[in-house]
Length: 116
Image (cartoon, rainbow, N blue to C red; front, side, top):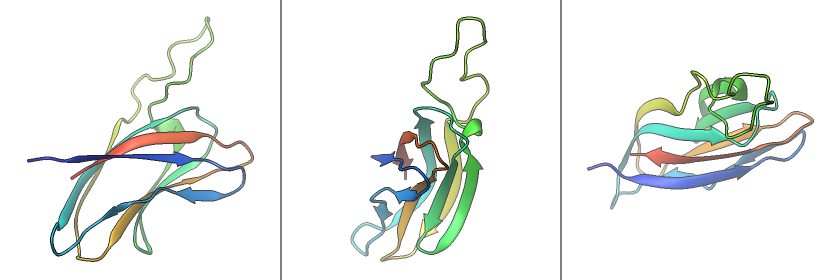
């Protein structure tokens, strides 16, 4: 069976913000398969995945699908962008995986779900 847990990260200018994360426990061990993700707008920010203090991935938001509207004379902004980031990690008991948004001078928000 697969489970999904919603998350949201609210960006702040020139800061890195984290979601609450997905925690593995003895009662409910987790295998994080992937992260499904969408950014509100592409602002040249970095999206990161952390298993405790280990950075598992770092991607520019330009690679991620967005709900931002394109101008009338340009193609849609969501062409060939990522919607799901494969992770494939067995999380040791007591560890937490978090998604972070490292914003530059213009913040944006991101939404997603852990697939485990």
